[in-house]
Length: 414
Image (cartoon, rainbow, N blue to C red):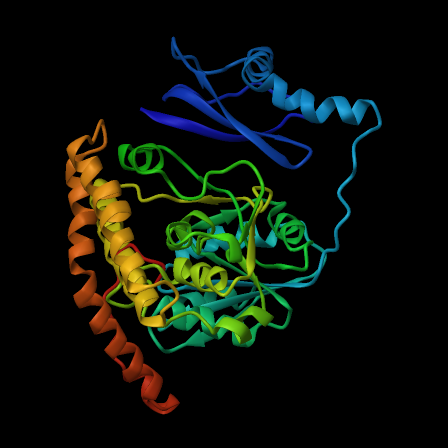
């Protein structure tokens, strides 16, 4: 059975939770005055349609009372330092391809975000029809079509089209929280910070595949605490695990950093044979140059995980293929020595991550681990093919782009 997911602001009145007939547990992301604290689970056994407000409150206090007290006590004693940071104008870029139904939910959430000065740019990446253009025509957003197929081509077009110094990216299968951009602004309060990412929570846990991805595989970015990452102090291993610091579904950058490290690599991510890792590689490149990034859970979004086992298997295969291509890109760019990359690839990624889980999968299906491993074995060939595709697309004049045969994309951003 599924798990009910809810956001709960503890500083506001707590209401009973209803509509629980088909859920075995409830998972609450508890906030206090906009700051995520921790997840709290409430078992629904025996199954009930309603859980009372009193039980909700008492469970939260029992499980995270100390965390709440650490915030509430200074406030009541007048010792709290209220956050005071600027809210710079931001350009929000959402890249999509032929997924108008998903885009509708994403734009509805983005338009509801509480922020004083932001523009929204929809990058329609090599669309096969006009449905997205027709949908956004009536909305207060800017529509741009990028004919070169590939998510990183779309992201780079977003950078070129953006009007503001802070450029924030998300995907069409993401539902940003109302405080999302204020969380981004908090992360960028330090002028040394060049990139910010934040909490990515599941929008639903209704199916077995969604539960497997979130808890068996590890989901996306799940930290509920802030942290700064100083690239000049990272070991080679920590630098290569850049997937721990940012994710494409929820990331923002100072425009100036692209002049320093370059744009997104168009041979990576969805819409290319590599199928992923454009976001990871950008965070890696920024940190490898000695710049700093920040993670702030207040920059919070919900992500719609794949609902079926087949779609999840494809996603994990793509993850393996993309991460392998990312390591090859690191070698190509000489951001880390080849010896360190080879050591990391075997000891940390192949042996420490995939083979270890293959030997001891627990309740996570071995066939999904095999999917990721097969993707990893395909990555050198996919990387070479993607490099040739990127070179070919970069050389094409604008008038020939519409004649480019588009790849068949299943379950991706485009």
